[in-house]
Image (cartoon, rainbow, N blue to C red):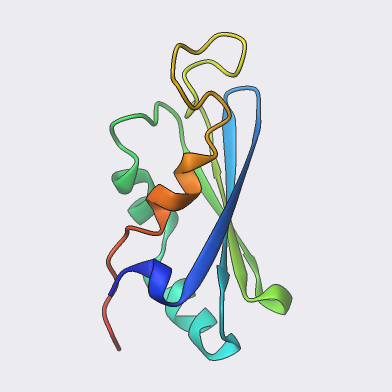
Length: 102
């Protein structure tokens, strides 16, 4: 199943760093996100644009994971030639990750 079936996402940026929060719709699905959506998995998913590291932070009280992608925005808003210099579309791209139905 795609992540979008059980979660939604929001993205923000600061310079060349993107921050993406992945939030479970239902509290019962949060452990599935923790199991299957690792920093390594996110780094692999964004390998074509990511030049830095990915860190994952768990926010159990909100049923959310926050991913910080360093060197992911082509230098940042004032330096990037990308159409989406703020990286807002990265949250939608994250939701395309496939995870098991368990």
